Length: 163
Image 1 (spheres, rainbow, N blue to C red):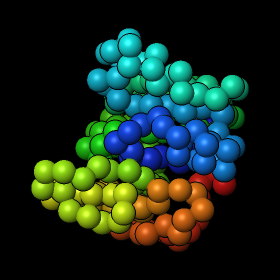
Image 2: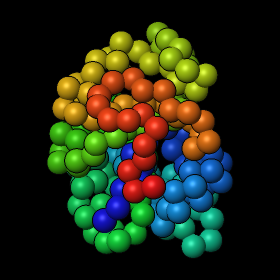
Image 3: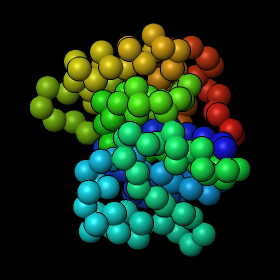
Image 4: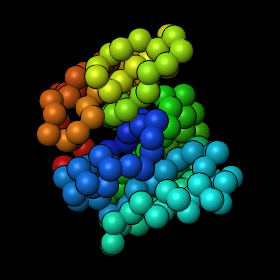
């Protein structure tokens, strides 16, 4: 298995994913890990319909992300979460990852600007710190051609798993 990118993106599947990240990382499988999407057939089909030809898109729950990744074989996988808390929940359910990309976290409420595309609330920051304490490198990067902005954790900010 080759997890190329684990990303938090409020929009899940959208143009940046399909036209920039997928070709840049040569992704074969996008795995959307979201219990709400999993429970909604219309939303699942809508997400799958955004895939370009030859790209497989699957939806799984937060409790079994690791199993889906293990079954991916040699395919290059991009895992998408809608929110930081979902990435942390998946990790607590056994999905092991060393790097977490914050791509698009929408503004609103008590969220504060971190970058042009990432806005976080205090609970998000604490959850990211918890991941950092577990050795996860957390970085902000909207597009593959932008320089990453490291938030916490270890490792070179500019490196990519599987790239």
